[in-house]
Image (cartoon, rainbow, N blue to C red):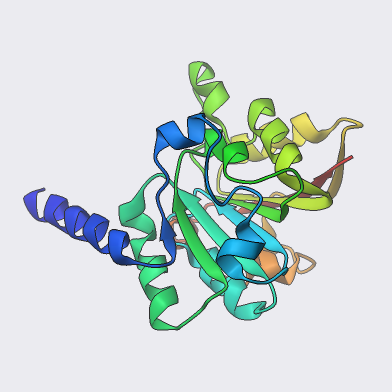
Length: 226
């Protein structure tokens, strides 16, 4: 345990020196005074390329992969656990990828990080399904979160959900079975579906590899707001 704590502290310290890691104070976010809100293109990326988010990014596997595959797009991994995305941030710096950033922040305050229509796509990769009823509001596809995503996404923006949780997959499908949403794709077991989008199976996160070893089916869906 002590060694694990030391490693975390070391990573926290390193994150403070990484130019691609942004750690806004919660009080600044709560005042809606984050300096890059509405200014990501002008003040951070210095281009007008589309911005894609990975929420609960963990080690940042999707952020890194997508950024490599799409150099003309900007990617931002967001997670409250900085010791996790340390690996992704360090790799991005080592590989000199300037279309990547990582933000340590609470996702429930995401609308304080981005302006209206500032984001093109959102990836939600293997979030905690929060199965217990009293934890419903913490699900990253709860209506409260969906309303926040709608605010920051462009009109034709896409939300991707990839999860091992059949519960969360079904819960989300139920929510978007509504005229306010358009379902683009959904499948309950993408690795046993030859028609699955290539982007859904091209990269596997740390947790995804664990789930696959346990023979858990991986679900994936895409949807838009109308």
